[in-house]
Amino acid sequence: MIVSIETIIIATLLVTVAILVAFIAKFALRSRRLAANVVQLIIDKNAIAEELDRLSFISSNSTDIENGFIKFLSETRESAYEYISDVQASIAELKEAMDSGKDDDIESSYKKLINFLPSSSTGMID
Image 1 (cartoon, one colour):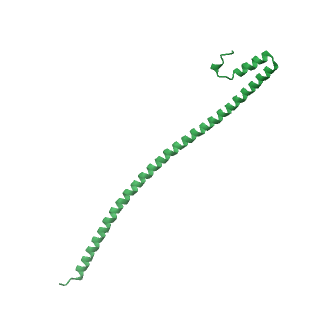
Image 2 (cartoon, helix red, strand yellow):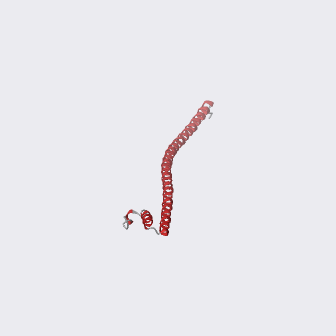
Image 3 (cartoon, helix red, strand yellow):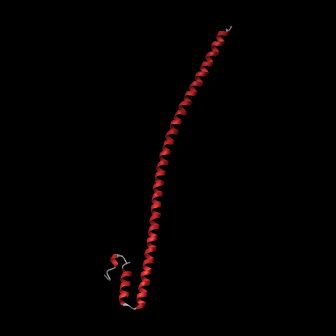
């Protein structure tokens, strides 16, 4: 049995075509998997970006609230120091009035000191 060159060439071409078809099928399958992975990566990236935006918004609001609270503490601390200083000055004024023995000065200094008490506590002297 003699095999002709044309038969060998045709057989070689058929095998080559079969191998190429197999490579193309394998490549197409990998391409689909890669495309699916790329789509999933894009979805994941968008989800992460949205979460980062949300966390950034929460963080900036938290910072604003924290800064507001610090400002409140600072302002109330200053008010408290001012109040304490004013009360101490009024106490010193009452002490001086008592040392002088003048009833009008004592009464005036006492009323000034009582005015530092909250409104509900000032029922003693009007």
